[in-house]
Image 1: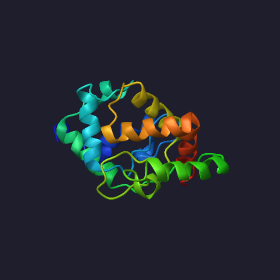
Image 2 (image 1 turned 180 degrees about the vertical axis):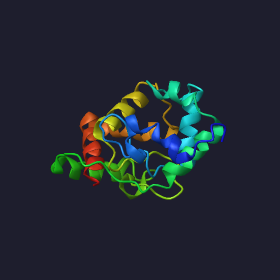
Image 3 (image 1 turned 90 degrees about the vertical axis):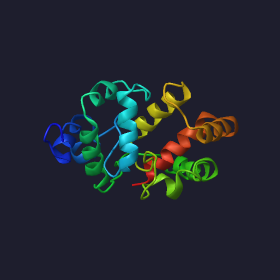
Image 4 (image 1 turned 60 degrees about the vertical axis):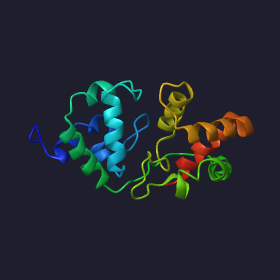
Length: 176
């Protein structure tokens, strides 16, 4: 590594927002512990190149070398994912499970839980405000939404409205 720092040492610099070892204390920053390493690298490169929208991460990511990002990716990928403990409306979460199954399950299988070698951010158990902010960024075209996801989100909004999104966010919150 250019800096001589280990993945764990580098990961400690993320703790202010993403929590110790990547376990977010919430609510605006996602838990990154257990994140698929290649997805972590892809996101960090996107932040560096300003192709992934961020408020802070773009500036921070530019300070890391490729080797340092790889070391952090390996470190966080080696951690077990732990969902955020947060309140949710059980009835809304039940509706959200059906919405997830209809619109999201094909790509975000097993209820959005982390799966080995899956290249997407973990949804199940992430902080609800973080998921809301991320979806706002996708919908406002500040962040590129994959073509398949755009089609599914548009369909969800057309048939379920914003209440459908609220329900699916409650479902993800319920995954504790």
